[in-house]
Length: 482
Ligand code: SF4
Image 1 (cartoon, helix red, strand yellow):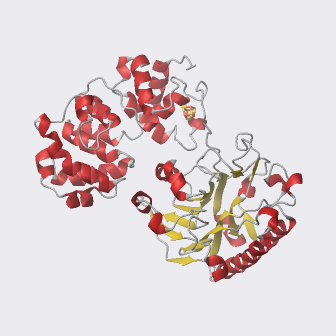
Image 2: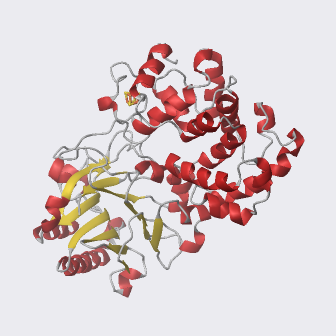
């Protein structure tokens, strides 16, 4: 049952908390221009796009096309260039190119009702509600993902789709908030109640919020804030195409990472969707296995590397797409998918050969610059790193041979950054899909960020992002100042 909450108190408290925060870009455009056409176009551009990107793209477009008639004079190609790099810019350019013809039935005026608006290309219920409420100041409830998420976190409603949320809010939310609730909760969701690691520690509602399904951010060790230093993330996604369907592209924007290393991508570049190949703000680098649907590593980076190195220089391992390295001015970032020793340790020899080669590779690079290694190491180092050490001694990932290699890796001077900050048990990064292992936290910590000893002082934080779902692994994180 939804909780009885004083929604008036909640929304007034949030309004006060966000008064210095940025107003969502579409509201800003509405206030500045009072022009339904510009609100409509900016709303179309804003879907799956950061506000600052939408603002710049809208400004470029409105310089050339301040109304529907001048928009009609631009070709799809020109539109594509003007709005790049908003999310799904090619599709949005197609929709904008069709807008003039579609609006003929409304005498080229932006309609004022949801039913009419959703007849336009690229306009769904959310966009239509936003145009009605923001551009025409008429009662409508736009349900952005933040509204849907936060209203459920508070347990003001109990719904599983934005449409149901809109209907539930139409039935319960006082009229005074219909027009404003979206901009209030978008600003709150972007700044405090973030989708990943909400900042409950500074939230004025923390004493009363139901926090349904929430994993608040943890302030770990010296990590002062999520923006300190560069933010690197490593994640075994267990299939990039599978995780794309679970919202990977949106997650990447929310992570706000400078570089993310992925393992087990299970795809070759020609199997990727356009959306995966063109995530705004990021360049991607792929090292895939020769065998289709197997292994593979990749990086998405918004930092420009001085060089990219593929593999270890040994065909025995490189055909499996297990290592990719970004070289920056003062450090190397190596992304590794270590082999699994396999059922009955069938591939243990292969794995140990890989381990040895990898250590030599890292030591070689260390002679030139600092080295950061991230990835799925496929080994839990100590007993504290898995739930059931006793029963797994003979199993892949906890065999004496694999752990001995990890000992030698540490003896060679490489540091497991997570343990600089956290000595607690039950800090896992992988859970079997079987036996509800994740909900019972029966897991293993096999995903790491490690650095060479000279880079230790550059590390300002390390964490496991257990709240992120989408794979049988969760991402791990490193904050680093070069
Ligand atoms: S307490 Fe946490 S979950 Fe609740 S509203 Fe505040 S930030 Fe969001």
